[in-house]
Image (cartoon, rainbow, N blue to C red; front, side, top):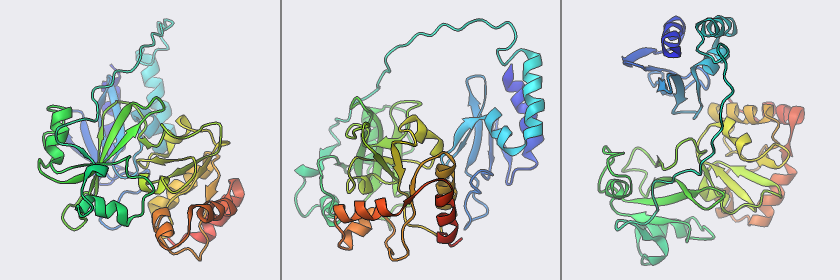
Amino acid sequence: MSINIDLKYISLIGSRLSKFSRKKDYLYNCRCPLCGDSKKNLNKARGFFYRKKGGLFYKCHNCGVGTSFSNFLKQIDVELHKKYIMERFKSGDTGFSNYKKPEFKFSPPVFKTQLKSKFLVSIDSLGEDHLAKKYLIGRKLPNLTDFYFTAEWGNYIEDILPGEYPSLDKTQPRIIIPFYDKDKRLTHLQGRAISNAVYNKRYITIKIVEEVPKVFGLDKVDFSKTVYVVEGPFDSLFLDNCIAMGGGDCEQLNKIVSPDKGVVVMDNEPRNTDTIKRMNRYIDMGYPICIWPEKIKEKDINDIFLSGMNTVKIMDLINKNTHKNMSAKFKLRSWKKC
């Protein structure tokens, strides 16, 4: 089985991974070597190897990268990866030996749940003095009908996904941000804490459908036009034809929109090493990217809007500061401060 070969090679590469440890059978942990993990806390280790479909899979909960052990190994040590591939080839685990043409059977995806619950109410139905509604109004979001509220976060998730997330705080109040696919079917739920001071995790995302990119706004954009790609759902509401990547996994974007149809607009964080790495990766993938001018001090699009700049001016600012390929690389090198 390929799992035995994966286990052999993870033992070989493990000594070179910072904070590498075996948690239990088929579960290993390390600091992510792809994004560098936390720069503030060197003890944080958010990269995990776990068993999936007969082999090991790698996932980083900092940068969002998810890939097979083979692809991970290839990025860390090309020569060792060649030996790994040869060993799998010899064992017949790769499908090269005794190859049989696969049969492709396409079935519509099964969606496990719907949004409705006795623990959920629309933001519109709340009183004007309700903390959740006041927060969203304070952010000057153009449309509140996209959002909901639950006073019992854990109980709400248990109601729609029984037994799947038992560790959630049962009575924690959160704003609910639903993610839909192009066919307007629910794929993810994001719970946003109202008070940053009370809860350590500002955002918690619940997966409804497996193997679907975490992207907000797919149900509303016109893919025949230029699609703007931002980080946060709130920011996406202030731009024309815009989606938000709900995680840091850059590789997912080319499944959504091609480089000739997309423009990436990251947050204005020149001192954030993770932001810089992702911007570099998007440029390498061929996407045009906005490099914010020095005069902009606000962190994100929502903050820029709150500073007094309307949507038309923000769109114009983005288009005038969008670069591609070597021009983008040059601008990014002079813009970053880390």
